[in-house]
Length: 63
Image (cartoon, rainbow, N blue to C red; front, side, top):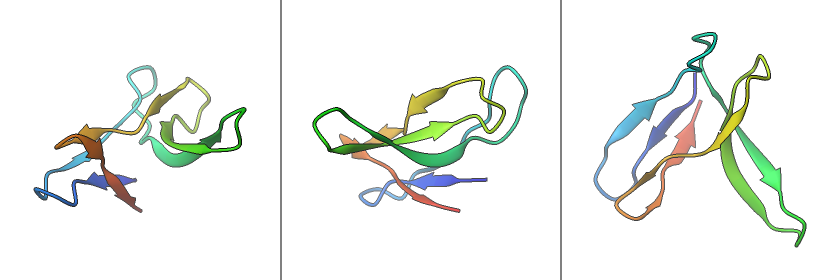
């Protein structure tokens, strides 16, 4: 399971899919302008979300 942690305050979070309860996995999404965005996705293709924010910044991910 991917664990997201705030580098500023130390808060951490684990996330699961509401449809199947599978642990979300860390991934990235390529945007049309060539940049990438960190996302969390369901391994069973139920969807994806932008990775969590804390203290106004993206939380870093460790697996």
